[in-house]
Length: 231
Image (cartoon, rainbow, N blue to C red; front, side, top):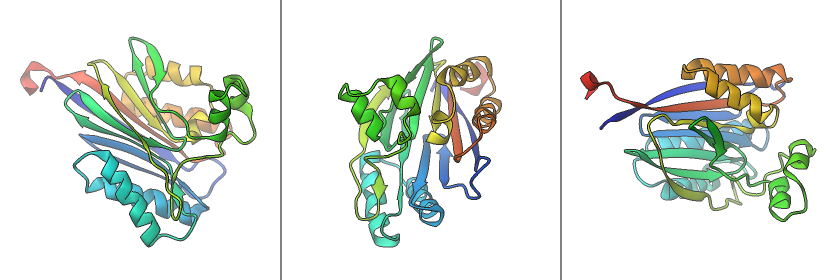
């Protein structure tokens, strides 16, 4: 293998909420962010269950998401739910599983691109041409999720495969970052801060600097070339 993944994590309850309903899981071949829904007790339970399933999973993410949905039905109260955005690596390829409004981004050749597609009411209106992306950014119901993993009402995730390149930087994040920051500022931090841990905590500080009304979780994965003595 000619590359390695350098992974950094930052998670924070924000400045308003007492509890952090976000859950995060990382290992060399898998990174995931889950944002709980349904009130803090239910949300924490649902997001934790999602990452606990992934912690024992080795294969394709589609069956893993189905197992999360099954266990939510069996083990959590009605209405407990979570978003999920996860990357599972096979060499320089990765499978992306996504449901909800957490997000996955890549910085490649200096450009920031969103890999996931929000499952929200405002995004559906944008897709239908009934709202501009700029209007969606400030809509009071921009956090209203249409698809999620939820006890009694789970939906199917988006499952896609992607080819990575050495030099790529990937960001998984909950909407506590993207709903309360300017994407240009996020892009600037990802470009200007080589250390992943420092960049992740700068992103948390950016959201908190704008009031921090939601939980904030960031996972940064850098695809770097292995040194010759590491091979």
